[in-house]
Length: 271
Ligand SMILES: C[S@@+](CC[C@H](N)C(=O)[O-])C[C@H]1O[C@@H](n2cnc3c(N)ncnc32)[C@H](O)[C@@H]1O
Figure 1 (cartoon, protein in one colour):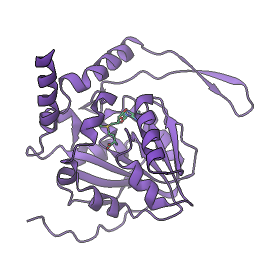
Figure 2: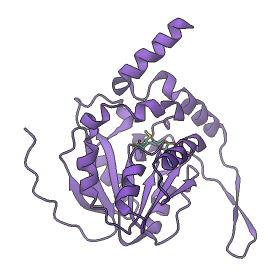
Figure 3: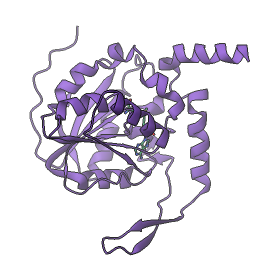
C-alpha cells in the first residue's frame, strides 16, 4: 500500500517525461478498449421538430492519415494538468496573449479538462462574452464547475460532448482553443467538421500541440504532432493555416480556419 503510494508520488513528479504511460492513462486505455469493441451503435438525438432521430455512431479510429491517435487522458490526471511546471513548459500568459481574445467574444475551450485555460478565457471575454467549455468526461466538467463557483465566474457554459460530436451551435463561435487535445480525438473528421461549422465566417481554431519535430520535448510521440501532419489533417478537412506563432517553449500554436491567410508577426529566433 505504502509502496504503491510512493510509486504514485514518483509518477506525479515524473509525469512530464512519462505522459501517456501507466496509471494516469489506465482509465483511458480501458475506455478506448471498450470503444474498440463497439464497432458502431445507434445514437439518439432530438430533431428540431421534437422527434427523436436515430443515427449510427461513427466508429472510433486508432489511426488517422498515418498518425497513431493517443488515448484520452483520464480525469485522474487532473493534478498533472495543474502542475506548477506548466508555466515554464507552456508559457500560458504568452500563449493567451497571442489569441487576441476580446471582450464580448464567444470562445470555445475544446477538451477543457478541469479548466486550466477556461478560467483565463472567461476573464478575458468578460460578462458580455462567454466560454463554451466542452469535454467528454463528466468528472472534468464537475471539477470545472467547482472552479467557476470558487472564482464567481458566470459566463462559462459547460457541454458534455461525445467523442464524435462537440455539440456546438453552428456559426456562433469566434475562436476554438484546443490545448493538448486534438491528438486524442478518436473521430477527427467528425470533430473537425462540427468545429468548422460552429465558427463564424472569420472564426478560427487555435491549435496548441507539443512539437513532434523536437526530440528535446519530453513527451510521448503519440501526444506530440508535427506541423506537417497538422496541416495534412486540417487541409483534408477544408481548413488551412491562417497564422502561426513559433515562440512557445515546447508547443506549436497554429491558427486554422477557412478564412484568408494572414502574415505571421515577425518572430525573432529564441536565444
Ligand atoms: C490532456 S487533456 C487537456 C485539458 C486542457 N485542455 C488543459 O490544457 O488543461 C485532454 C482533454 O481532452 C478531452 N477530450 C478528448 N477527446 C475529446 C473530444 N472528442 N471532445 C472533447 N474533449 C475531448 C479529454 O477528456 C481531456 O480532458
